[in-house]
Image (cartoon, rainbow over all chains, first blue to last red; front, top):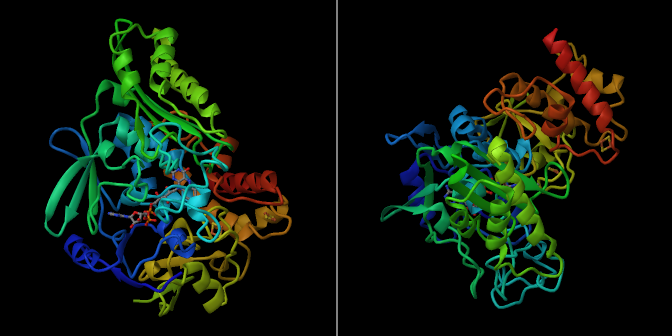
Length: 329
Length: 169
Ligand SMILES: Cc1cc2nc3c(=O)[nH]c(=O)nc-3n(C[C@H](O)[C@H](O)[C@H](O)COP(=O)(O)OP(=O)(O)OC[C@H]3O[C@@H](n4cnc5c(N)ncnc54)[C@H](O)[C@@H]3O)c2cc1C
Ligand code: FES
Ligand code: FES
Protein backbone atom coordinates (compact mmCIF):
# COMPACT_ATOMS: atom_id res chain seq x y z
CA UNK A 1 0.00 0.00 0.00
CA UNK A 2 1.50 3.33 -1.03
CA UNK A 3 1.41 6.04 1.66
CA UNK A 4 -1.52 8.43 1.75
CA UNK A 5 -2.80 11.13 4.04
CA UNK A 6 -6.32 11.16 5.53
CA UNK A 7 -8.72 14.06 5.98
CA UNK A 8 -12.16 13.84 7.49
CA UNK A 9 -14.24 16.36 5.53
CA UNK A 10 -16.68 18.16 7.79
CA UNK A 11 -19.04 19.23 5.01
CA UNK A 12 -19.58 19.13 1.28
CA UNK A 13 -17.61 22.30 0.49
CA UNK A 14 -14.58 21.01 2.32
CA UNK A 15 -14.89 17.61 0.61
CA UNK A 16 -15.01 19.21 -2.84
CA UNK A 17 -12.03 21.45 -2.11
CA UNK A 18 -9.95 18.54 -0.80
CA UNK A 19 -11.16 16.17 -3.53
CA UNK A 20 -9.92 18.49 -6.27
CA UNK A 21 -6.31 18.03 -5.18
CA UNK A 22 -3.91 15.73 -7.04
CA UNK A 23 -4.63 12.07 -6.63
CA UNK A 24 -7.13 12.51 -3.77
CA UNK A 25 -9.94 9.96 -3.46
CA UNK A 26 -13.21 10.07 -1.60
CA UNK A 27 -13.62 7.45 1.11
CA UNK A 28 -17.00 5.99 2.04
CA UNK A 29 -17.07 2.97 4.31
CA UNK A 30 -13.81 1.81 2.77
CA UNK A 31 -15.06 -1.74 2.21
CA UNK A 32 -13.94 -1.64 -1.41
CA UNK A 33 -11.36 1.14 -1.58
CA UNK A 34 -9.28 0.06 1.44
CA UNK A 35 -9.16 -3.48 0.06
CA UNK A 36 -8.05 -2.27 -3.40
CA UNK A 37 -5.42 0.06 -1.92
CA UNK A 38 -4.05 -2.82 0.10
CA UNK A 39 -3.94 -5.05 -3.01
CA UNK A 40 -2.07 -2.29 -4.89
CA UNK A 41 -4.83 -2.22 -7.48
CA UNK A 42 -5.52 1.40 -6.58
CA UNK A 43 -3.42 4.18 -5.10
CA UNK A 44 -4.17 7.59 -3.64
CA UNK A 45 -2.25 10.58 -2.32
CA UNK A 46 -5.02 11.50 0.09
CA UNK A 47 -8.27 9.93 1.28
CA UNK A 48 -11.06 12.42 1.86
CA UNK A 49 -13.56 10.80 4.21
CA UNK A 50 -17.13 11.63 3.17
CA UNK A 51 -18.76 8.87 5.23
CA UNK A 52 -19.14 10.90 8.41
CA UNK A 53 -21.29 13.73 7.04
CA UNK A 54 -24.72 13.76 8.55
CA UNK A 55 -26.92 11.81 6.13
CA UNK A 56 -30.65 11.40 5.98
CA UNK A 57 -33.47 9.70 4.10
CA UNK A 58 -36.44 11.98 3.47
CA UNK A 59 -39.55 12.30 1.33
CA UNK A 60 -39.39 14.81 -1.52
CA UNK A 61 -42.11 17.32 -2.38
CA UNK A 62 -43.17 15.10 -5.27
CA UNK A 63 -43.63 12.03 -3.07
CA UNK A 64 -40.30 10.45 -3.92
CA UNK A 65 -37.40 9.65 -1.63
CA UNK A 66 -34.05 11.39 -1.33
CA UNK A 67 -31.17 9.47 0.21
CA UNK A 68 -27.89 11.16 1.06
CA UNK A 69 -24.76 9.46 -0.23
CA UNK A 70 -23.35 8.83 3.24
CA UNK A 71 -26.39 6.78 4.37
CA UNK A 72 -25.32 3.26 5.25
CA UNK A 73 -26.63 0.31 3.25
CA UNK A 74 -28.12 -1.22 6.42
CA UNK A 75 -30.04 1.97 7.28
CA UNK A 76 -31.47 2.23 3.76
CA UNK A 77 -32.57 -1.41 3.76
CA UNK A 78 -34.33 -1.04 7.11
CA UNK A 79 -36.08 2.26 6.39
CA UNK A 80 -39.89 1.91 6.70
CA UNK A 81 -40.66 3.80 3.47
CA UNK A 82 -38.18 1.74 1.46
CA UNK A 83 -39.64 -1.47 2.87
CA UNK A 84 -43.24 -0.48 2.11
CA UNK A 85 -42.92 1.45 -1.17
CA UNK A 86 -39.80 0.08 -2.87
CA UNK A 87 -39.44 -3.45 -1.49
CA UNK A 88 -37.12 -4.54 -4.32
CA UNK A 89 -34.56 -2.04 -2.99
CA UNK A 90 -34.66 -3.36 0.58
CA UNK A 91 -34.46 -6.90 -0.77
CA UNK A 92 -31.49 -6.11 -3.02
CA UNK A 93 -29.57 -4.48 -0.19
CA UNK A 94 -30.30 -7.33 2.21
CA UNK A 95 -29.10 -9.85 -0.39
CA UNK A 96 -25.70 -8.11 -0.59
CA UNK A 97 -22.53 -8.75 1.39
CA UNK A 98 -22.92 -9.31 5.18
CA UNK A 99 -24.50 -7.37 8.03
CA UNK A 100 -21.08 -6.03 9.06
CA UNK A 101 -20.31 -4.78 5.55
CA UNK A 102 -23.79 -3.27 5.11
CA UNK A 103 -23.22 -1.33 8.35
CA UNK A 104 -20.06 0.19 6.85
CA UNK A 105 -20.95 0.57 3.16
CA UNK A 106 -22.39 3.88 1.99
CA UNK A 107 -24.81 4.51 -0.85
CA UNK A 108 -22.18 6.51 -2.75
CA UNK A 109 -19.53 3.85 -2.34
CA UNK A 110 -21.88 1.08 -3.34
CA UNK A 111 -22.60 2.79 -6.67
CA UNK A 112 -18.88 3.29 -7.38
CA UNK A 113 -17.61 -0.08 -6.13
CA UNK A 114 -15.42 -1.80 -8.67
CA UNK A 115 -15.63 -5.19 -10.32
CA UNK A 116 -14.77 -8.37 -8.42
CA UNK A 117 -13.07 -9.92 -11.49
CA UNK A 118 -10.19 -11.99 -10.04
CA UNK A 119 -7.80 -10.84 -12.77
CA UNK A 120 -8.56 -7.21 -11.99
CA UNK A 121 -7.64 -7.94 -8.37
CA UNK A 122 -4.44 -9.83 -9.19
CA UNK A 123 -2.09 -6.87 -9.67
CA UNK A 124 1.07 -9.00 -9.65
CA UNK A 125 0.01 -11.95 -11.74
CA UNK A 126 -2.65 -11.15 -14.33
CA UNK A 127 -3.33 -8.98 -17.36
CA UNK A 128 -6.29 -6.66 -17.14
CA UNK A 129 -7.18 -3.80 -19.47
CA UNK A 130 -9.18 -2.13 -16.75
CA UNK A 131 -6.25 -2.06 -14.36
CA UNK A 132 -3.53 -1.51 -16.97
CA UNK A 133 -4.95 -0.32 -20.30
CA UNK A 134 -3.58 -2.25 -23.27
CA UNK A 135 -2.24 -5.17 -21.23
CA UNK A 136 -4.94 -7.65 -22.30
CA UNK A 137 -7.80 -9.49 -20.64
CA UNK A 138 -7.03 -12.76 -18.91
CA UNK A 139 -10.70 -13.37 -18.12
CA UNK A 140 -11.76 -13.93 -21.72
CA UNK A 141 -9.82 -17.18 -22.01
CA UNK A 142 -9.72 -17.86 -18.28
CA UNK A 143 -12.06 -18.30 -15.32
CA UNK A 144 -15.13 -16.40 -16.46
CA UNK A 145 -18.03 -17.97 -14.59
CA UNK A 146 -18.87 -14.60 -13.00
CA UNK A 147 -18.38 -12.49 -16.10
CA UNK A 148 -20.61 -10.57 -18.48
CA UNK A 149 -22.96 -11.92 -21.13
CA UNK A 150 -24.39 -8.58 -22.25
CA UNK A 151 -22.68 -5.37 -23.39
CA UNK A 152 -19.12 -6.69 -23.01
CA UNK A 153 -16.26 -6.11 -25.46
CA UNK A 154 -13.13 -7.81 -26.73
CA UNK A 155 -11.21 -5.77 -24.19
CA UNK A 156 -13.19 -6.47 -21.02
CA UNK A 157 -15.90 -8.83 -19.79
CA UNK A 158 -16.09 -7.68 -16.16
CA UNK A 159 -19.42 -7.23 -14.36
CA UNK A 160 -20.53 -4.55 -11.94
CA UNK A 161 -21.10 -6.39 -8.66
CA UNK A 162 -23.69 -4.20 -6.91
CA UNK A 163 -27.08 -5.59 -5.91
CA UNK A 164 -28.41 -2.20 -4.79
CA UNK A 165 -27.80 -0.63 -8.19
CA UNK A 166 -29.91 -3.29 -9.94
CA UNK A 167 -32.95 -2.24 -7.92
CA UNK A 168 -32.11 1.46 -8.28
CA UNK A 169 -31.95 1.26 -12.06
CA UNK A 170 -35.29 -0.55 -12.17
CA UNK A 171 -36.77 2.21 -10.00
CA UNK A 172 -35.52 5.05 -12.27
CA UNK A 173 -33.25 6.47 -9.57
CA UNK A 174 -31.39 9.69 -10.27
CA UNK A 175 -27.91 10.47 -8.90
CA UNK A 176 -27.07 13.96 -7.58
CA UNK A 177 -23.49 15.01 -8.26
CA UNK A 178 -21.49 18.00 -7.06
CA UNK A 179 -18.20 19.47 -8.29
CA UNK A 180 -16.38 22.72 -7.40
CA UNK A 181 -17.96 24.34 -10.49
CA UNK A 182 -21.56 23.26 -9.87
CA UNK A 183 -24.08 20.47 -9.48
CA UNK A 184 -25.84 18.13 -11.91
CA UNK A 185 -28.09 15.09 -11.89
CA UNK A 186 -27.58 11.93 -13.93
CA UNK A 187 -29.98 8.97 -14.12
CA UNK A 188 -28.42 5.94 -12.45
CA UNK A 189 -28.90 4.12 -15.76
CA UNK A 190 -26.34 6.49 -17.33
CA UNK A 191 -23.74 6.51 -14.53
CA UNK A 192 -21.86 3.34 -15.49
CA UNK A 193 -20.31 2.88 -18.94
CA UNK A 194 -20.02 -0.27 -20.99
CA UNK A 195 -16.36 -1.19 -21.59
CA UNK A 196 -15.94 -0.74 -25.35
CA UNK A 197 -12.27 -0.09 -26.07
CA UNK A 198 -11.75 1.83 -22.80
CA UNK A 199 -12.74 -0.43 -19.92
CA UNK A 200 -10.64 1.67 -17.54
CA UNK A 201 -13.28 4.43 -17.80
CA UNK A 202 -16.11 2.96 -15.78
CA UNK A 203 -18.46 5.86 -15.08
CA UNK A 204 -19.39 9.29 -16.40
CA UNK A 205 -18.17 11.00 -13.22
CA UNK A 206 -15.49 13.62 -13.69
CA UNK A 207 -12.37 13.67 -11.51
CA UNK A 208 -13.22 15.17 -8.11
CA UNK A 209 -16.96 14.85 -8.65
CA UNK A 210 -18.85 13.81 -5.52
CA UNK A 211 -22.06 11.81 -5.27
CA UNK A 212 -24.20 13.75 -2.80
CA UNK A 213 -27.51 11.85 -2.94
CA UNK A 214 -29.78 9.57 -4.89
CA UNK A 215 -33.41 10.30 -5.55
CA UNK A 216 -36.22 7.87 -6.23
CA UNK A 217 -39.32 9.11 -8.03
CA UNK A 218 -42.63 8.53 -6.26
CA UNK A 219 -43.44 4.85 -6.23
CA UNK A 220 -45.57 3.47 -9.07
CA UNK A 221 -47.69 0.34 -8.67
CA UNK A 222 -44.90 -1.80 -10.13
CA UNK A 223 -42.30 -0.24 -7.84
CA UNK A 224 -44.35 -1.33 -4.85
CA UNK A 225 -45.33 -4.78 -6.15
CA UNK A 226 -41.70 -5.72 -6.54
CA UNK A 227 -39.04 -8.16 -5.49
CA UNK A 228 -35.38 -9.04 -5.94
CA UNK A 229 -34.11 -12.52 -6.60
CA UNK A 230 -30.41 -13.37 -6.44
CA UNK A 231 -28.90 -16.64 -7.65
CA UNK A 232 -25.48 -17.37 -6.18
CA UNK A 233 -23.04 -20.17 -5.42
CA UNK A 234 -23.96 -20.21 -1.73
CA UNK A 235 -27.16 -19.01 -0.13
CA UNK A 236 -25.73 -15.96 1.64
CA UNK A 237 -22.62 -13.73 1.63
CA UNK A 238 -21.78 -14.28 -2.03
CA UNK A 239 -21.89 -12.16 -5.15
CA UNK A 240 -24.61 -12.76 -7.72
CA UNK A 241 -24.26 -15.11 -10.65
CA UNK A 242 -27.55 -13.64 -11.85
CA UNK A 243 -29.96 -11.35 -10.10
CA UNK A 244 -33.31 -9.92 -11.13
CA UNK A 245 -35.09 -6.87 -9.77
CA UNK A 246 -38.69 -7.08 -10.93
CA UNK A 247 -41.83 -5.00 -10.51
CA UNK A 248 -45.23 -5.68 -12.05
CA UNK A 249 -48.64 -4.08 -12.26
CA UNK A 250 -51.39 -6.20 -13.73
CA UNK A 251 -54.77 -4.64 -14.64
CA UNK A 252 -57.61 -6.82 -15.94
CA UNK A 253 -55.18 -9.66 -16.56
CA UNK A 254 -52.84 -7.59 -18.73
CA UNK A 255 -49.43 -6.10 -17.96
CA UNK A 256 -49.91 -2.36 -17.29
CA UNK A 257 -46.37 -1.73 -16.07
CA UNK A 258 -43.27 -3.92 -15.86
CA UNK A 259 -39.91 -3.00 -14.35
CA UNK A 260 -37.07 -5.45 -14.88
CA UNK A 261 -33.33 -5.11 -14.30
CA UNK A 262 -30.55 -7.70 -14.23
CA UNK A 263 -27.41 -8.00 -12.13
CA UNK A 264 -24.35 -10.16 -12.79
CA UNK A 265 -24.70 -9.83 -16.56
CA UNK A 266 -22.88 -6.63 -17.56
CA UNK A 267 -20.48 -3.86 -16.57
CA UNK A 268 -23.52 -1.89 -15.45
CA UNK A 269 -26.81 -2.67 -13.75
CA UNK A 270 -28.80 -3.82 -16.78
CA UNK A 271 -32.26 -2.38 -17.33
CA UNK A 272 -34.18 -4.96 -19.37
CA UNK A 273 -35.87 -2.43 -21.67
CA UNK A 274 -36.59 -4.94 -24.41
CA UNK A 275 -38.37 -7.30 -22.07
CA UNK A 276 -40.34 -4.44 -20.53
CA UNK A 277 -41.44 -3.17 -23.94
CA UNK A 278 -42.34 -6.67 -25.11
CA UNK A 279 -44.59 -7.21 -22.09
CA UNK A 280 -46.62 -4.03 -22.17
CA UNK A 281 -50.30 -4.81 -22.75
CA UNK A 282 -49.77 -8.56 -23.02
CA UNK A 283 -51.71 -11.01 -20.84
CA UNK A 284 -49.80 -11.66 -17.61
CA UNK A 285 -49.08 -15.28 -18.41
CA UNK A 286 -46.09 -17.61 -18.31
CA UNK A 287 -45.94 -17.54 -22.11
CA UNK A 288 -45.69 -13.74 -22.20
CA UNK A 289 -43.02 -13.73 -19.50
CA UNK A 290 -41.01 -16.40 -21.29
CA UNK A 291 -41.16 -14.56 -24.61
CA UNK A 292 -40.07 -11.30 -22.98
CA UNK A 293 -37.16 -12.97 -21.20
CA UNK A 294 -35.99 -14.56 -24.44
CA UNK A 295 -36.24 -11.21 -26.19
CA UNK A 296 -33.97 -9.59 -23.60
CA UNK A 297 -31.33 -12.30 -23.76
CA UNK A 298 -31.35 -12.59 -27.55
CA UNK A 299 -28.27 -10.38 -27.75
CA UNK A 300 -26.32 -12.35 -25.12
CA UNK A 301 -22.75 -13.32 -26.02
CA UNK A 302 -21.68 -15.81 -23.39
CA UNK A 303 -18.14 -17.04 -22.75
CA UNK A 304 -17.01 -20.60 -22.21
CA UNK A 305 -17.52 -20.49 -18.44
CA UNK A 306 -20.77 -18.58 -18.25
CA UNK A 307 -23.03 -19.90 -21.01
CA UNK A 308 -25.34 -21.19 -18.27
CA UNK A 309 -26.17 -17.59 -17.37
CA UNK A 310 -28.32 -17.06 -20.46
CA UNK A 311 -30.86 -19.70 -19.49
CA UNK A 312 -30.51 -18.91 -15.80
CA UNK A 313 -31.29 -15.24 -16.42
CA UNK A 314 -34.35 -16.15 -18.48
CA UNK A 315 -35.68 -18.57 -15.89
CA UNK A 316 -35.08 -16.10 -13.07
CA UNK A 317 -36.92 -13.31 -14.91
CA UNK A 318 -39.88 -15.64 -15.53
CA UNK A 319 -39.91 -16.86 -11.92
CA UNK A 320 -39.89 -13.31 -10.53
CA UNK A 321 -42.68 -12.14 -12.84
CA UNK A 322 -44.77 -15.24 -12.10
CA UNK A 323 -44.42 -14.62 -8.40
CA UNK A 324 -45.35 -10.94 -8.77
CA UNK A 325 -48.35 -11.76 -10.98
CA UNK A 326 -49.62 -14.06 -8.24
CA UNK A 327 -53.20 -15.10 -8.90
CA UNK A 328 -53.28 -13.28 -12.25
CA UNK A 329 -50.85 -15.62 -13.97
CA UNK B 1 -9.51 13.18 19.37
CA UNK B 2 -8.59 9.71 20.62
CA UNK B 3 -10.38 6.41 20.02
CA UNK B 4 -12.19 4.83 22.94
CA UNK B 5 -11.38 1.12 23.14
CA UNK B 6 -13.27 -0.86 25.75
CA UNK B 7 -13.82 2.35 27.70
CA UNK B 8 -10.22 3.66 27.69
CA UNK B 9 -8.89 6.37 25.37
CA UNK B 10 -6.16 5.47 22.90
CA UNK B 11 -4.24 7.78 20.55
CA UNK B 12 -4.63 7.61 16.78
CA UNK B 13 -1.80 6.01 14.78
CA UNK B 14 0.46 8.41 12.88
CA UNK B 15 0.15 6.41 9.67
CA UNK B 16 -3.43 6.47 8.31
CA UNK B 17 -2.83 3.14 6.55
CA UNK B 18 -3.07 1.29 9.88
CA UNK B 19 -6.31 -0.65 10.06
CA UNK B 20 -8.39 -0.72 13.21
CA UNK B 21 -7.54 -4.43 13.40
CA UNK B 22 -3.79 -3.78 13.37
CA UNK B 23 -4.19 -0.99 15.90
CA UNK B 24 -5.98 -3.38 18.25
CA UNK B 25 -3.67 -6.34 17.82
CA UNK B 26 -0.24 -4.91 17.09
CA UNK B 27 -0.24 -1.63 19.01
CA UNK B 28 -2.67 -2.14 21.87
CA UNK B 29 -1.97 -5.84 22.45
CA UNK B 30 -5.66 -6.70 22.23
CA UNK B 31 -5.22 -9.98 20.40
CA UNK B 32 -8.73 -11.30 21.01
CA UNK B 33 -9.87 -9.83 17.70
CA UNK B 34 -8.57 -12.11 14.95
CA UNK B 35 -7.04 -11.57 11.53
CA UNK B 36 -8.47 -14.01 9.01
CA UNK B 37 -8.68 -12.89 5.40
CA UNK B 38 -7.92 -9.17 5.82
CA UNK B 39 -10.36 -8.66 2.91
CA UNK B 40 -13.85 -8.55 4.40
CA UNK B 41 -14.63 -12.15 3.54
CA UNK B 42 -14.62 -14.01 6.87
CA UNK B 43 -15.82 -11.90 9.83
CA UNK B 44 -13.06 -13.00 12.25
CA UNK B 45 -12.16 -9.34 12.84
CA UNK B 46 -15.70 -8.22 13.79
CA UNK B 47 -15.85 -5.57 16.55
CA UNK B 48 -18.51 -3.13 17.73
CA UNK B 49 -18.14 0.48 16.58
CA UNK B 50 -20.53 2.82 18.37
CA UNK B 51 -22.50 -0.33 19.17
CA UNK B 52 -22.84 -1.65 15.60
CA UNK B 53 -20.90 -4.60 14.17
CA UNK B 54 -18.22 -3.76 11.62
CA UNK B 55 -15.12 -5.39 10.14
CA UNK B 56 -11.97 -3.98 11.73
CA UNK B 57 -9.79 -5.21 8.83
CA UNK B 58 -11.48 -2.83 6.37
CA UNK B 59 -11.84 0.05 8.82
CA UNK B 60 -8.94 2.47 8.94
CA UNK B 61 -8.10 3.24 12.56
CA UNK B 62 -8.34 6.97 11.79
CA UNK B 63 -11.97 6.44 10.78
CA UNK B 64 -12.71 5.43 14.37
CA UNK B 65 -11.52 8.77 15.75
CA UNK B 66 -13.84 10.00 18.49
CA UNK B 67 -15.85 6.77 18.41
CA UNK B 68 -16.33 3.87 20.79
CA UNK B 69 -14.82 0.49 19.93
CA UNK B 70 -15.74 -2.63 21.90
CA UNK B 71 -13.80 -5.84 21.34
CA UNK B 72 -14.26 -9.30 22.83
CA UNK B 73 -11.99 -8.22 25.71
CA UNK B 74 -14.57 -5.57 26.60
CA UNK B 75 -17.52 -7.93 26.95
CA UNK B 76 -16.75 -9.64 30.23
CA UNK B 77 -18.55 -8.38 33.34
CA UNK B 78 -16.88 -6.02 35.83
CA UNK B 79 -16.14 -8.98 38.07
CA UNK B 80 -14.24 -10.56 35.20
CA UNK B 81 -16.97 -13.14 34.71
CA UNK B 82 -17.94 -14.35 31.25
CA UNK B 83 -20.58 -12.65 29.14
CA UNK B 84 -23.66 -14.92 28.99
CA UNK B 85 -22.99 -15.58 25.31
CA UNK B 86 -19.41 -16.64 26.05
CA UNK B 87 -20.77 -19.14 28.57
CA UNK B 88 -23.37 -20.33 26.05
CA UNK B 89 -20.64 -20.94 23.46
CA UNK B 90 -18.87 -23.19 25.98
CA UNK B 91 -22.07 -25.01 26.94
CA UNK B 92 -23.09 -25.69 23.32
CA UNK B 93 -19.67 -26.48 21.79
CA UNK B 94 -19.89 -23.30 19.73
CA UNK B 95 -16.26 -23.68 18.66
CA UNK B 96 -13.42 -26.09 18.02
CA UNK B 97 -10.21 -24.17 17.33
CA UNK B 98 -11.76 -20.94 18.60
CA UNK B 99 -10.28 -18.72 15.92
CA UNK B 100 -13.59 -17.37 14.62
CA UNK B 101 -15.15 -17.16 18.11
CA UNK B 102 -14.41 -13.54 19.15
CA UNK B 103 -15.82 -12.35 15.83
CA UNK B 104 -18.84 -14.63 16.16
CA UNK B 105 -19.56 -13.35 19.66
CA UNK B 106 -19.24 -9.64 18.83
CA UNK B 107 -21.32 -10.19 15.72
CA UNK B 108 -24.07 -12.05 17.60
CA UNK B 109 -24.36 -9.37 20.26
CA UNK B 110 -25.02 -6.69 17.65
CA UNK B 111 -27.28 -9.07 15.74
CA UNK B 112 -29.47 -9.46 18.81
CA UNK B 113 -30.01 -5.69 18.87
CA UNK B 114 -30.83 -5.60 15.14
CA UNK B 115 -33.35 -8.38 15.60
CA UNK B 116 -34.74 -6.67 18.68
CA UNK B 117 -35.46 -3.45 16.84
CA UNK B 118 -37.18 -5.34 14.03
CA UNK B 119 -34.66 -4.84 11.21
CA UNK B 120 -35.50 -7.20 8.34
CA UNK B 121 -33.05 -9.72 6.85
CA UNK B 122 -32.78 -11.54 3.53
CA UNK B 123 -35.01 -14.36 4.88
CA UNK B 124 -37.67 -12.17 6.50
CA UNK B 125 -40.91 -13.11 4.75
CA UNK B 126 -42.85 -9.89 5.30
CA UNK B 127 -40.72 -6.74 5.02
CA UNK B 128 -43.31 -4.40 6.51
CA UNK B 129 -43.98 -6.66 9.46
CA UNK B 130 -40.33 -7.52 10.12
CA UNK B 131 -38.79 -10.75 11.39
CA UNK B 132 -40.91 -13.44 13.06
CA UNK B 133 -38.58 -13.49 16.06
CA UNK B 134 -35.28 -15.32 16.46
CA UNK B 135 -35.94 -18.34 14.25
CA UNK B 136 -33.02 -20.57 13.26
CA UNK B 137 -33.34 -19.35 9.68
CA UNK B 138 -33.09 -15.71 10.80
CA UNK B 139 -30.07 -16.41 13.02
CA UNK B 140 -28.25 -18.37 10.31
CA UNK B 141 -28.80 -15.69 7.67
CA UNK B 142 -27.87 -12.85 10.02
CA UNK B 143 -24.68 -14.66 11.09
CA UNK B 144 -23.63 -15.52 7.53
CA UNK B 145 -20.92 -12.85 7.64
CA UNK B 146 -18.98 -14.97 10.16
CA UNK B 147 -17.46 -18.09 8.68
CA UNK B 148 -16.25 -20.98 10.82
CA UNK B 149 -13.80 -23.25 9.07
CA UNK B 150 -14.19 -25.85 11.83
CA UNK B 151 -17.88 -26.09 10.98
CA UNK B 152 -19.13 -25.35 14.49
CA UNK B 153 -22.14 -23.53 13.10
CA UNK B 154 -24.78 -25.74 14.72
CA UNK B 155 -23.37 -25.12 18.18
CA UNK B 156 -22.98 -21.43 17.41
CA UNK B 157 -26.65 -21.12 16.44
CA UNK B 158 -27.69 -23.03 19.57
CA UNK B 159 -25.60 -20.77 21.80
CA UNK B 160 -27.14 -17.68 20.24
CA UNK B 161 -30.64 -19.15 20.61
CA UNK B 162 -29.95 -19.67 24.30
CA UNK B 163 -28.76 -16.09 24.75
CA UNK B 164 -31.83 -14.72 22.96
CA UNK B 165 -34.14 -16.94 25.02
CA UNK B 166 -32.43 -15.65 28.18
CA UNK B 167 -32.94 -12.03 27.07
CA UNK B 168 -36.61 -12.68 26.33
CA UNK B 169 -37.17 -14.32 29.73
C1 LIG C 1 -16.55 -9.87 1.22
C2 LIG C 1 -17.42 -8.88 0.50
C3 LIG C 1 -18.64 -9.30 -0.03
C4 LIG C 1 -19.46 -8.41 -0.70
N1 LIG C 1 -20.63 -8.85 -1.24
C5 LIG C 1 -21.43 -7.99 -1.92
C6 LIG C 1 -22.65 -8.43 -2.50
O1 LIG C 1 -23.05 -9.58 -2.39
N2 LIG C 1 -23.40 -7.50 -3.16
C7 LIG C 1 -23.00 -6.20 -3.28
O2 LIG C 1 -23.74 -5.42 -3.88
N3 LIG C 1 -21.85 -5.78 -2.76
C8 LIG C 1 -21.06 -6.63 -2.08
N4 LIG C 1 -19.88 -6.18 -1.57
C9 LIG C 1 -19.40 -4.86 -1.92
C10 LIG C 1 -19.89 -3.75 -1.02
O3 LIG C 1 -21.28 -3.57 -1.22
C11 LIG C 1 -19.13 -2.50 -1.41
O4 LIG C 1 -17.77 -2.68 -1.06
C12 LIG C 1 -19.67 -1.25 -0.74
O5 LIG C 1 -21.00 -1.00 -1.13
C13 LIG C 1 -18.82 -0.04 -1.06
O6 LIG C 1 -19.25 1.06 -0.27
P1 LIG C 1 -18.22 1.85 0.63
O7 LIG C 1 -18.94 3.01 1.23
O8 LIG C 1 -17.51 0.96 1.58
O9 LIG C 1 -17.23 2.37 -0.52
P2 LIG C 1 -15.67 2.71 -0.48
O10 LIG C 1 -14.89 1.46 -0.49
O11 LIG C 1 -15.39 3.71 0.58
O12 LIG C 1 -15.55 3.45 -1.88
C14 LIG C 1 -15.80 2.79 -3.12
C15 LIG C 1 -15.55 3.78 -4.25
O13 LIG C 1 -16.50 4.83 -4.23
C16 LIG C 1 -15.87 6.10 -4.15
N5 LIG C 1 -16.78 6.93 -3.34
C17 LIG C 1 -17.28 6.62 -2.12
N6 LIG C 1 -18.20 7.55 -1.76
C18 LIG C 1 -18.26 8.47 -2.76
C19 LIG C 1 -19.02 9.67 -2.99
N7 LIG C 1 -19.93 10.10 -2.12
N8 LIG C 1 -18.81 10.34 -4.14
C20 LIG C 1 -17.91 9.92 -5.04
N9 LIG C 1 -17.15 8.81 -4.88
C21 LIG C 1 -17.34 8.08 -3.76
C22 LIG C 1 -14.51 5.82 -3.56
O14 LIG C 1 -13.57 6.80 -3.93
C23 LIG C 1 -14.19 4.46 -4.16
O15 LIG C 1 -13.71 4.60 -5.46
C24 LIG C 1 -19.05 -7.06 -0.84
C25 LIG C 1 -17.86 -6.62 -0.29
C26 LIG C 1 -17.04 -7.51 0.38
C27 LIG C 1 -15.75 -7.02 0.96
S1 FES D 1 -10.20 -10.54 8.68
FE1 FES D 1 -11.73 -9.04 8.45
S2 FES D 1 -13.29 -10.12 7.41
FE2 FES D 1 -11.66 -11.57 7.42
S1 FES E 1 -14.03 -22.67 15.75
FE1 FES E 1 -12.39 -22.95 14.33
S2 FES E 1 -12.90 -21.50 12.83
FE2 FES E 1 -14.67 -21.51 14.04
